[in-house]
Image 1 (tube, helix red, strand yellow):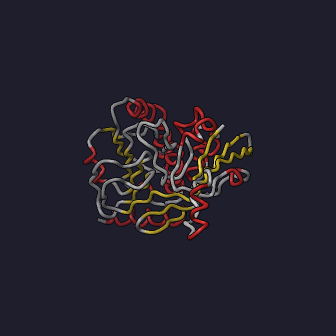
Image 2 (image 1 turned 45 degrees about the vertical axis):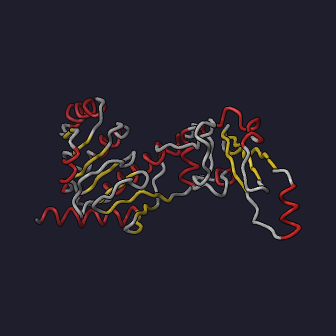
Image 3 (image 1 turned 60 degrees about the vertical axis):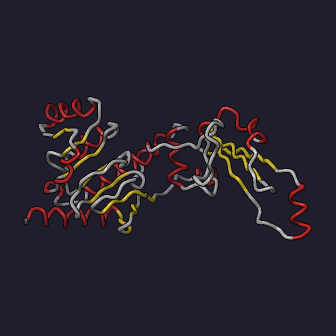
Length: 281
């Protein structure tokens, strides 16, 4: 069962009503909902004093305190044992699915220099599938041998070559970069590079970077989702904690970043233009 915590702080009243609110006890309500084989326990804490006393909800939350679904505006004391659920696994799938669809729709994909920044080694399946559209992609790996094994498979099974390295500077040659688990370190990119990643990068980057994804949440799950949670965050919990792995096949309708919004079609057209420009240099 998933557990979500919402905190409601009523607007400050005036006069006698304000005094009355100070005397009222905080209220804790629990609602259990089910849909598509998933159960959600939604705890709503209403604080009339403006403070949140976790001990009043601790018995209800129980062992779920370390992976609570809640707003990112809710901050827990460091040693309380309470932690907000966070995972990039589902976002990584959205990111890779959109990248693959964009390559599939790009007539000049073979002319693109494609890169994968994946030090955690989560997108090796994307690499194998992308070889149907791109040639000799550059992979920046971490301290594991996932991509070394995938490179051998690519050569043996598909006759395709892949460059695998730990040197991030190699991405400076790329027109299109997939970073499925986010970008938390400085990376040199050319200004016209297109980047799909999970979550807003923590460091400034050149290029057009897209990191938020819009999609249709399957029917039924929308009735479970607390209103303050985004669809991407809630589906991330369904995928990671609720074993709803079919969500990993979703192809986003669009992606957003500081440069605006792209649909799969417009992203494919953008990549096609970049490929033609790179080819004509």
